[in-house]
Image (cartoon, rainbow over all chains, first blue to last red):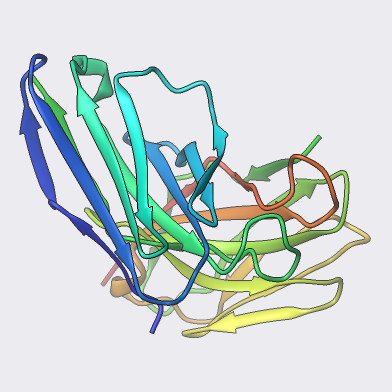
Amino acid sequence: DTEVTQTPKHLVMGMTNKKSLKCEQHMGHRAMYWYKQKAKKPPELMFVYSYEKLSINESVPSRFSPECPNSSLLNLHLHALQPEDSALYLCASSQDFGAALQETQYFGPGTRLLVL
Amino acid sequence: GNSVTQMEGPVTLSEEAFLTINCTYTATGYPSLFWYVQYPGEGLQLLLKATKADDKGSNKGFEATYRKETTSFHLEKGSVQVSDSAVYFCALSDRSRGSTLGRLYFGRGTQLTVWP
């Protein structure tokens, strides 16, 4: 089973709201990723967690705050977002990060976020 | 550096036509290569992959061969169906040591539309 689940599927929020996106995988993967995808563009890497520790932050604004409570769960906390943050947010996981031949990433269905 | 170049779309075909989507890459190390597919309103699904030169990845009638001499990983299908309409992303993961290890580098994506 190569399933990554994400909730919610859709989210509408105002610029003063606080919300969270959730991602879960039960494949025993130790690396998890957040991507942002704008329409008609490839995904852009935001964060990478490896063994529950933040490995990469791609200079993402602090209004996005990731959290990895355990090896199966990944959250993205959102606060004071801007309309230009509206996008599809994708979660992915892989067996490992930084290890050759264990790097295949499996993506979730995404959360479509609209910031008003 | 690492980069992926995909043929520009959109690609429009009739059902049962032959499909080729070109993908070439530049890599500093020894990449693994991937094709992902994104159906409308969904996340990315791994379509196929290849981890070393001359490997052929295949799935659901799609094939791609890792050609180191031409740094290419072209996607082919002998007879497309309406249900193949989607955006296809070529990607590489650099397996050499260093900070780029494990990152995915995406091409721009190619929109495929298949008419009945």
